Image (cartoon, rainbow, N blue to C red; front, side, top):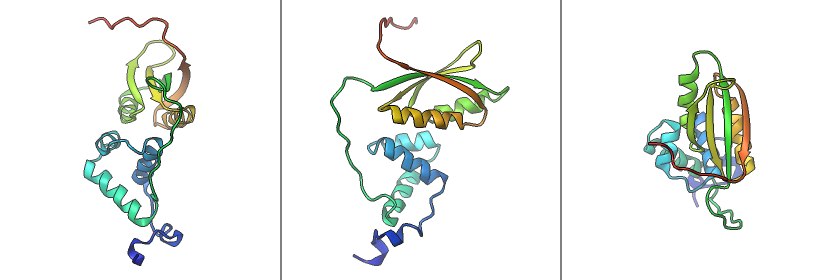
Length: 161
């Protein structure tokens, strides 16, 4: 193996991770099989940008491999949570745009009352939900959140057309 492709620990510090690289790594940690197209859409960049960044991190030894985590098989999503958000005045469009880039958020509603938005988040584990909530709280314009995990469905009528 040549030194250019070496994945020794000394090769890793020379590679500087920027914010986009960090976001890509975070997404891969959550789901290493997430399609590049979905990652690119969520990050607001092109597919080729994501592919190039992943390739560069593999070459530099930052990404050393991919693995599979196996648990007991279950039906459907693991953790579903309703996340209520209070946002600062006039920042709702920016908050909505930021939240729409998170693949874990599958629905987002405007609401009245104490909270301005309600998001339905779906994750595989509570640790991922916790990390998502931290990221949501870090979005510019988010003042407060209140979340609750959905346990079981007691009634599921179709939406009105």
